[in-house]
Amino acid sequence: MNIKRLSDAPAFDVSGITHVKKRIVLGPSDGSKEIVLRYFSIEPGGATPRHSHDFPHLVKIEAGNGLVMDENGKAHKLEQGDYIYIKDNETHQFKNSGTVPFEFICIVPGRGEGLVS
Image 1 (cartoon, one colour):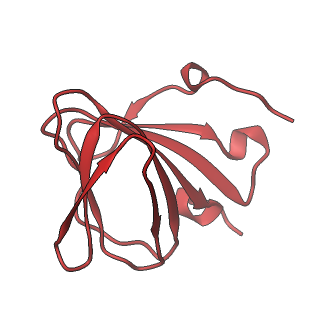
Image 2 (spheres, rainbow, N blue to C red):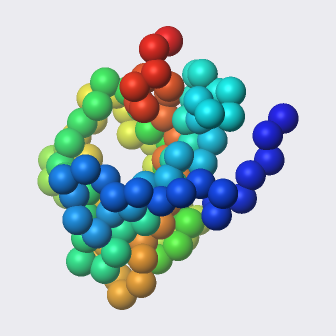
């Protein structure tokens, strides 16, 4: 068993994206070879790129207000306590629509962080 605090996981900038920080809270360094729990923080005015992956995401909004853009470009409002399932290869984008950091947990399979299954 491994018990950690969010503050135990260092935040780092996401390569090529401004105003987005990522933490690997639980993952390979904790012995988890199959799933990775990540924590993202998007500053006001920030957004992830519109993208897709060949793996699913389980997302829980922790703080702030934001939007998730779906495959068709439709914006869906998000706030603390909302949950999202993003299926394999589904195009998506997260945007901060508020004045404080927009933060969420994102759980992906190990291959989502480059781990070999």
